[in-house]
Length: 222
Image (cartoon, rainbow, N blue to C red; front, side):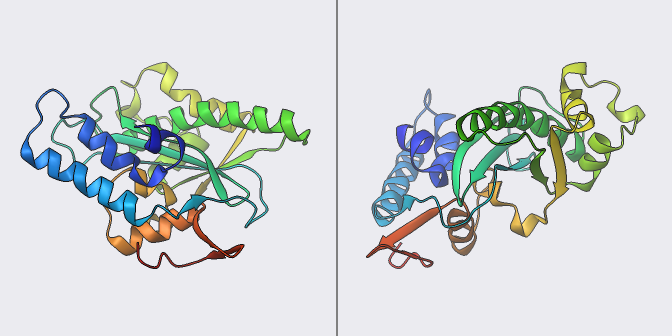
């Protein structure tokens, strides 16, 4: 838990899945735990690294509602600054939604709340001028709902507090942009991925192998 929350965002999804079985552990869960430790052992030289890129706070939001038996979607977000992740989360949504657009819409609302707080915090620390924070999403329907104030009958059952994302976009606090699914960094916190995808997204989160002061772009031996 400590590693997934503080230093290793790449194991957050695996830890989230294992936590669901704390009250009814079995042999298969213990084997999964050992695989997590095996992964941590293989990536023990990988560290969060900052300064490889120079950019303001960037947010990524995503959700996956099709892979879980409990029917509650998995929401996740990451915020990256200067080439390294500064905040990340992966959790079950509190309600069962009726469409993919709703899943992404609710995930974006929670991401926006975290993003506004981080944006203000970093602005105070670096004394920078307030500019809209960029938030990336890979769902076109959600972007249209949040940006165009596009009322739709299928959304009228959603509680009003979830429409917070529309308000912050209208006020210019957040600028929503589309990000192709293959480039969605936060996927590593949302679903099971292939090895090369995990490596790709971990690098984008700022997890690198330092070697003589030079950041390696490949996870040799991981």
